[in-house]
Length: 359
Image 1 (spheres, rainbow, N blue to C red):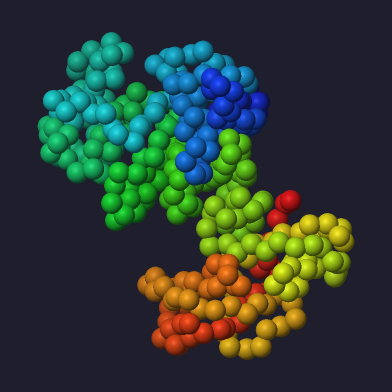
Image 2 (image 1 turned 45 degrees about the vertical axis):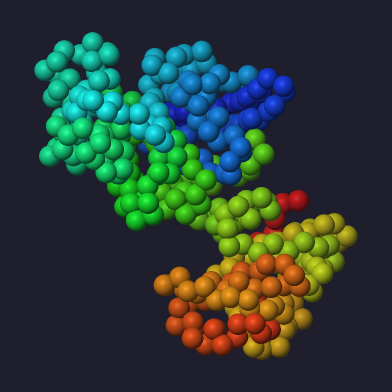
């Protein structure tokens, strides 16, 4: 089997609902076996519809979905070598943890002794051996999630699909479960495909992130690639803490382009043609803030509206001629920076920290 056939492959996948509503358009994606892939995007972008098509809970209007070279179109969810863990875990309230986990094996016709052995092994894997006789109502949200995972793991799928798996948990538990889920996936070596609208969650967990917007894939890349090199304005803004400038390319300088914007000249690495539109992004943590004079290039005068203390850093909410602008500085500058609230300061950045966006 070729590398192109290994794993999960979506080729030219569309999903059009009645009324000619396109939920997913032209999705082409290859997920390798053992990858942790996160679909990220705002509500209505197509990420959950894509997950449902992978799991067999919805059918593509066109295109193909294959797993290890085997066509999945028209194959029922129960017959696919993949299982979905939904946001609301759908545990049987009257059954114990052990009975919940063993249920799928019972449906497969596995005899009682063997399914109990396999279920106990899966429960042990998620760290709930001491709770296998409890009912779901006696468990915390995080423990219920682990039961749902064990119930899936016991069927030994090739891939596990997770639909907003941390959405119902409080922030501290979310952070704990991120670590646990990632560690479990690495230990098992099973493909995990995870849907979320939470950028921090995606960045902290994924091998690769698939950013979706307006029914299409906007960009696929590692967390670092997406954070440092967003392809376009949609990705730059959705990933958060990116400032975007628009203007017209006025010329080049070595391997850089110069963009004339309403806020001054900007120089950024890349190529372009004079007279054409140009856009760039700069991450908040690459912005320097001082009381120095504004330089001729890559600097703007801004007003500091609010300094938000985040513990390990300070997020500066700035006003650039009526538009929001962000910067992040080390926490040790908090006392100094607060003194500038309500006043004008200068924001600057290095040429190499800017990123030229596709038009």
